[in-house]
Length: 335
Image (tube, rainbow, N blue to C red):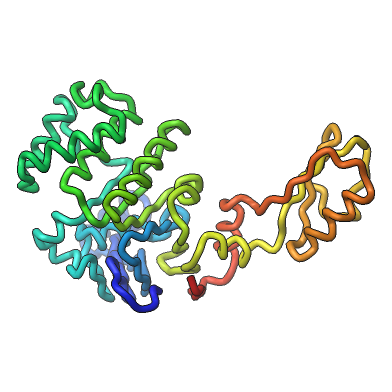
């Protein structure tokens, strides 16, 4: 939680429970359900609490079904919670006040808002009318965003003629024409190639720098989170497991590092130095306890003719798996 000061997003014990019908398979069960329906409660989000400061970019991580999208939908006003409270920019999101809707946006990588058979520019004009943006202000910001995203030639084509990556950039442009102060980003680079993902990340970072926008980002691509977010909130089964810095997450949940070393000796026996992860043509990878990494590296340098040696933390994906495998209790971390 943010200690003191202003916050753009405040979430306190937020929860969402869905009541869903259920029945067994088969005709008899189907007929029985017409007379007596049974239901069960699905707890999508349970007592979630966090604060996000103005201009902060926070990664919101978890497996499929963890409650990430449900949380974003509550914070953007699409869903009403069954418990708890939240404010965004001083507004209660599900009251859907006009002033609030003008100051936020929700971007979902698997949803589209652009009209399929007309150029994106025409959809941009529709958004200008919806948000009642003064014409001069609209044109200036539109041209600026189009230039940043490098879509000057694309916005004049019918949307159905754009590739997925091109359409996603146009979608992002449309979502930002009213210059929102808070961005909820749900898998904004899903399905895009590596080059397009990098361009989207660069644009979001630049938008944050220029306008001080606050962003809450979900993504299964850890490169998105590492490039944009210093802080992450990890959620699973609707509850927060970790809230703190990305760097602290790695050191807290991964007690090992990997030493990659290239030796002249292509048949070296290195099991005494750590767990040998791979060995091929003089290149070796060892998993070593973090507190022993420096000592092991020194021993290797003293014992062998070393061509190259690097020490790396484990991939963030592996660290996240360790979080899911651990205790399902909230971890408080001082940032």
